[in-house]
Structures are given as structure tokens and as C-alpha cells.
Image (cartoon, rainbow, N blue to C red; front, side):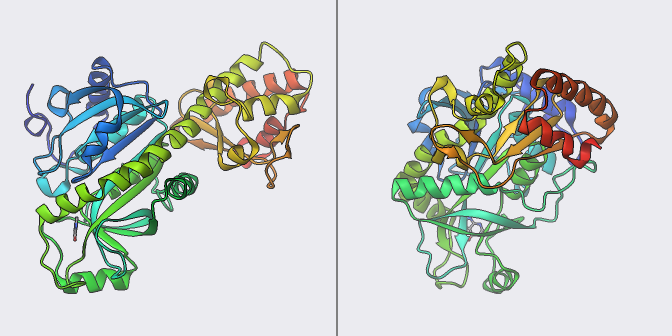
Length: 407
Ligand code: HPA
């Protein structure tokens, strides 16, 4: 297959066809059907060994997947299971500093969404600006500063206030605690690279509010959020940033420290991925649940909500404590692929009482503003149908009607 670099014109905005081609060839190679995708950065690829029943597909066997020539990047996808969750691992990534365009760097992220993934975990190696963080520390990103000078989003896509999903972050914190792994939190600044920073640049980044510095991730995170994925990201702090400790930096040190941290990193991911994937799977379950309930009108809608809320993948019950963590996303199939309805809080559970404290609320995001009129018409039909079936007993539908997007 032709290399992606020759195959793709550089710097073109809005390469929908290229995303579709990549997604189609990934599907043809058996890489679809995962709730969650994970991108493994420099020196962190070994986590792939933890995957059961893994199917491996090299980037260059796929149509339009840019490769990476950076040492420590395997350049392949792995499709397998971990803790019962099906996940898609991307071992290695393309970087802007290698000459790839923002569209190419983020193409696989758009393909993940096209293949039905709902959550995205990004990882990278980074330099630490905090003296107290020893090399090998792990940090989850609470936000980023994009200093790469390239904008990864398309004109119609609005940048998120923050690309990183707070609930996915809380899930990572919980997994870290359960795994006995210390997980710092901080702001990641991305520079173009490929050279490391000067001590003066690191002082500047510190003044700007950065805790870690690297050369990747921010474009993927912004695009992941824009296409509706729940994004979380973790940096492995492989070295003190330039001038912090006085030691010279090298890529081999970055890869070596990444390897040394890999056992802790794997313990964290082994806990976190199934939980993050399960939250994503729950979304699908809710979707089927809603579709199914249309043919079986419930006697008591509160109980029906409970049925959605407390049934996990495979029918396993979910306890109140667990349930409270999820932001429930209800994908109403009749609304088509471009609408997501989020419903939060106030789910009733007869065993545990009322589990969430906030009142329910529903929000509709329109992914494509050109579709709003058609979407509204469809939504009105669906809402009418639910009103008829449930006689407005539904908290979800009731609140849904109350949101301003439906006025
Ligand atoms: N700077 C930029 N990128 C990095 C570093 C660093 O110190 N360490 C690992 N990736």
C-alpha cells in the first residue's frame, strides 16, 4: 500500500473522504465494535501486551493512516479485550513535527468516532515542570495550552471550553486510587517540537500555567471532543523539563523512563479502561432500552428509569454508588446520528432510594447546525410518541421538553 505521506495532500482542511476511507479500511480489517479507543505515546506501547485476544493491524495496511517514524512507536492498532471491555489501541501516533498536517494527525480520532467509539484515552510522554514530580510520575490532563501554532478543528466545529471530560477524569482518579497508583493532575502545554525546550521557554511555560510539556495530544483531544468522544488523557512525566534539574534531555531517556513507569501505568489503565468503556457501553444499552420500551409501555415509569439505570452490560446490576458516577447519555436512535441527549441526576432506585442529588436535566447537542430544522421535526415526533406512551410520567421526556433547544 502506498505510504500515507505520499497518498495525502498536506494541510487540507476537512478531509471527510479520507476519514471515511480510513474508517472503512479499519472496519474491513476487523477493528470496529469497540466502545473505547486508547492512543499509546512514546515508550508506553507495552501496555498492548495486556490485551486479550488481540488482533494486530499495522498502520501501513490501512488506507490513509499516517505512520510515525519516531523510535518507541510501534505503528499499529490492536483490537482486543481488557477486563471484559472491547478496546482499540493505537500504538504510536503521527506528529506535526514530522510534517503531518493537523488533519492527518487527528484522522484516526475521527475514524474512532465513525467506528462507534464513545470514549478516547490519550497518553503521552512529557517533561515535568514541577520539581517535586519525579521522572516516572503520571499526570492526568485537566486542560491544555496549544502552542503548536496549528488549529485542528474545522471551521464549523466549535472549540470546547475544555476538551477533557470531567467525569472520565474522576473515573481515572478512582481507578488510580483503587490500583494504588499516584496520579497527579495538571495542565499540559504542547509545542511543535521536535527539539526539546530551552530553560527560558520552560520558565515561560511555567508562568503561563503549564505543569507538563510535550509535542502531541492537544489536537487529538480537541478533535475527539468535537466529534463527541468522551476524552481523557494521561502524561507519563519521563523527565524534568529543561532547566528544572540541570540534567540534559534525550529521547532515549524519555523512552527508558516510559518503560520503567509502564507497570504502574498498566495497573492504572487496567482498572480505568473497563470502567470508562462500561460507561460508554451503558450509553448504548440505554439506547436499546429506550427503543425496546416503546413496544412495552411500563406501568410505572420510575421503575423503568431504574431498569435503565441499574442494568449494566450483560444485565449485571449496577449499584447506586457506581451509578451516581455516570453521566447518562441517552442516544435516541430516532434522532439520527447527529444528536445526543444527556440526562443527568435524579434517577430513582427502590433499593437505594433517590441516588442523585441534582434534578434531571436534558440537553441536546447538535453536531451539524445545518440539520437543526430536520432534527427538531424528528425530535418533536419522538417526544410526542413518548408522551403518548408514558403519559408524561417520564422525568426524562418532561425535562427534555423543558430545555431551550426544544422551544
Ligand atoms: N519536552 C517536550 N516533550 C517531551 C519532553 C520534554 O521535556 N519529555 C518527553 N516529551
